[in-house]
Length: 142
Image (tube, rainbow, N blue to C red; front, side, top):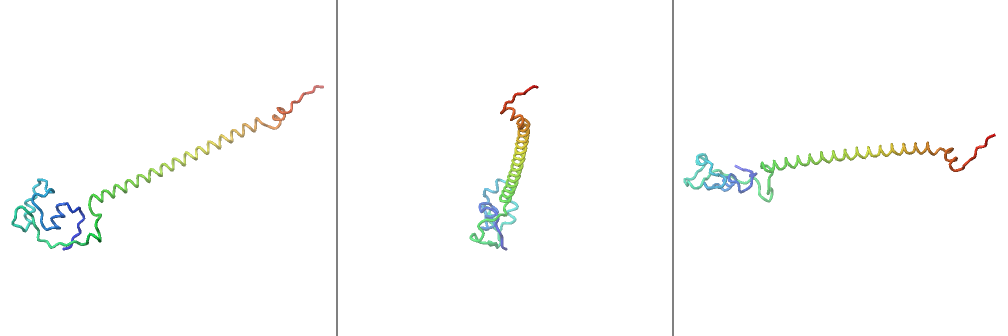
């Protein structure tokens, strides 16, 4: 049987399958009653060690594939990264849209102000008005 280990080497299951044995006092048991189930798998008469008789080998060597991405932790981490990237992209798009809207509003306001000011100035500075201010005239009555 060929296997692919996708978990950290310190995990009891990996140690049991990889080394063929596991101490009954392994920290992964956490005082949970696995003894009956593991005794059924064990081929050892020794009550301090669980052993299996499976003929297992690595499906790859560490130089070919030192890490895999098939663990739950890496799957969750990848999902978190995807969510963070999506949120960042959405935030950036919203910020860009808000900035574009603000720039358009500012440009429209500036154009309106310029048009109003030019219109006001053009009505105040008519050539006749300007001429009468610059060249005083006297009216003559006959």
